[in-house]
Amino acid sequence: MAKLAQPSASTFEVGELAPAGTFVATCLDVLDQFGVERPKFENPNESEKIDVTRFLFGLRGQDGNIYKVQSYEFRISGSPKSNLFKFLTAWLGNPPKYGWDYCELKGQGAMITIAHKQNRDNTRTFASLNSIAPVIEQLKGEVLPLEAFPADQEPQAPVSAPQAQQQSVPAAHIPANVPPHGQYPQAVQPAQPQAPQLQAPQPAWNPAIAPQNPSNPF
Image (cartoon, rainbow, N blue to C red; front, side, top):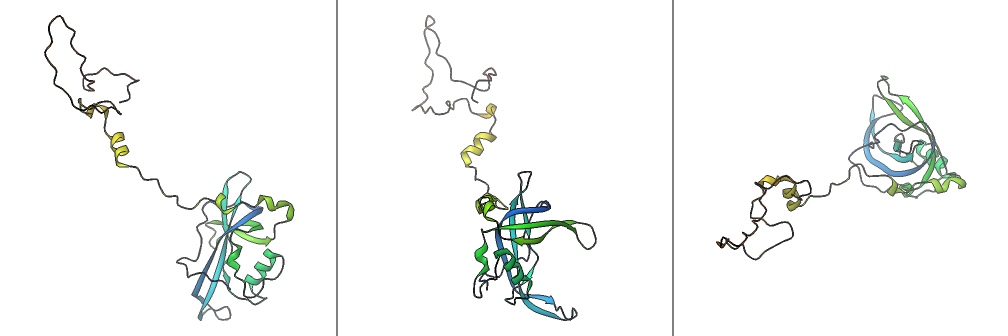
């Protein structure tokens, strides 16, 4: 049914524990894995290779924060008795059609109920997706788009070399003959001796001898 390429992992990164309750959620992704070796249900001492899938949902809690929760792992099977077929039927409100790619549900809304459960050794609490249903007509406007859920890793904006250099060089290390930012004189002429009765020209600003001034841009 699904047409995804084989992924490198069988679970999603969900982050912070999602709250318990019933929420309007958005299907964020579908993760298929093909040829996975699992113990046989009839005889756990024997193994078999099967195709499995799981779904990732996103929601906004009552605190305004974004959370994620994933479904259990389903065996990919079109049998009406399979857990995947029952899950999709409950979500759609009617049985899925054969030959349909359920990955098209990415971005679609759902009403999900989340419960908190403990792992086998009672060392960790996890969010369990206990039930799913279609979104009722009155709440369809509350289904968040995929863009409302940030990616797990946001790329950092590169910092240009001139900016990094300007921030890392202290003011006291700027040479005295460098003009203020934005001024580019053609050449620096040597000072000419002046007659005693004339006023001496003002020297260029020198950070080594200039008094500290909070309004100075350097």
